[in-house]
Image (cartoon, rainbow, N blue to C red; front, side, top):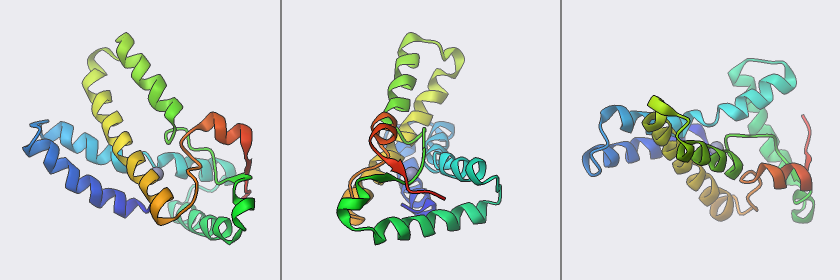
Length: 155
Ligand SMILES: [Zn+2]
């Protein structure tokens, strides 16, 4: 799903948090920005992998990659993944929640809770998009599964 769509969805969700759940303006904005900035893992994957730090090139790369992926026959698509995105993973969420439960975040606990809320909000819409709109299997929710069962489609 495109970053601008994530931003629009976050911009609808933040006022709900603020007005209905009384989360406060700062926390509502943390959720909004976290729901968009989680995609930094896509940018870093491209920038580090290609040693090219131009955001526009990264954006175009993923547009092109998606076309290449969708041009594959369905049975072929299952063999590949489109990158290593650690923030887009159930493992990252699980470890973060575990660390929060342990209380290691200290004074950052509430900040991290709202960041995780933003990340989760983003992931729910990524999943809805992948399953119902792009009509493909979710390929980025589990890092362990993705990296053990699939090959990177390549740069
Ligand atoms: Zn995403």
